[in-house]
Length: 147
Image 1: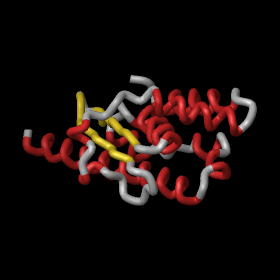
Image 2: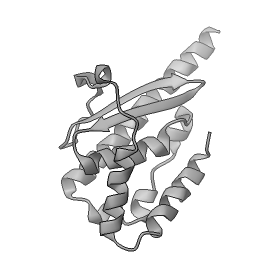
Image 3: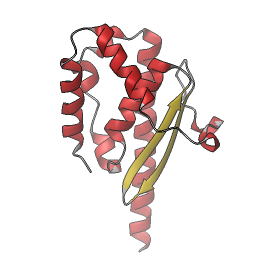
């Protein structure tokens, strides 16, 4: 498992290597295209991220104490954004997800280049991922207490 700070730095480096926001948008869309397809059985109401203008599905499970995220969206840029968030948070322990904010969003200047609705949607994705992590952390603590 890659250290979350290394993943964050790699994302920052990738975006800083791109000359302008046209290139950066293309990179975001490419991230979405590279996202593993989400099984249709997971594209359900319960997995929709609230607060996104586009449809964004976020499926999650726990594997070896790490939270695994799978996602999809019906819009290219939004799918790219959720792909970045999956890349950033997936495979990390709940505690790490809860305590690590995606500062790469600010560092690469993404905030200024997203529409308000996309910014709100991105914030909703992050919030939902942290909520899942908190739920898994609670479950894990409960299991440990029962053991």
